[in-house]
Image (cartoon, rainbow, N blue to C red; front, side, top):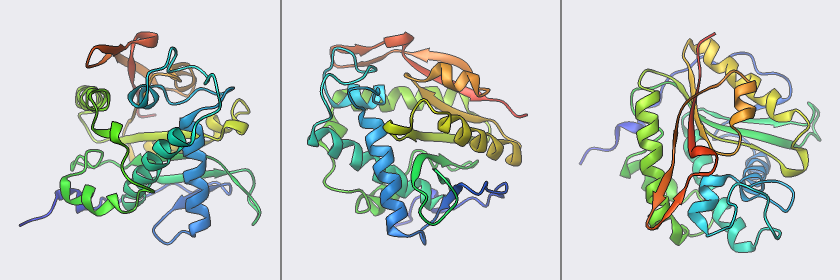
Length: 254
């Protein structure tokens, strides 16, 4: 039996890394990997003062406002859900050379304050790994797979993301799958600094950058992205259409 074509890794030349940006690889220290997973987890889970990632939050549980700050601090179950997602997505992006972290300095004591998990330009649909890769990476995710990953809402979200990606990113592109800033560091310009570096990946490769968002459309627009279309998401009897739905966004070649 052959294995999935997603095992074929693209060769991509990266721009020079700023002193406060780290490129994570399979050889990165466990402390750095843990710190990036922690930032992604806490950012996407949300807090009483910072909003969660809206689509994944909607897929996890019923909330009056899935794209607004939480009414209470995140539960252990919510944190475990986002930790599983973060560590799984980290494993896939590291495998393909697209995981980057922004530090709060360039010294040995610098801490991770933001991260971006990306897929480089390819014609292998690396963002949708085949069963071989999924099985090989499942063991790298922390804890058991949450039950909601097989629920109607998650399946609806995956279907919409696949359709929007196919419609608006047909040619080679960088794909930003996860972009996260630590809750305590949000609103201080760190996200813009990291996204500026991510934009340089597209410039270096000579390709556009594609992402989806429901919370942060205005932020990405300020950083050069353009909204292509919005997609309400219907899972079972529930529909997520806040702000018009999931926004497919593209930053064109500069």
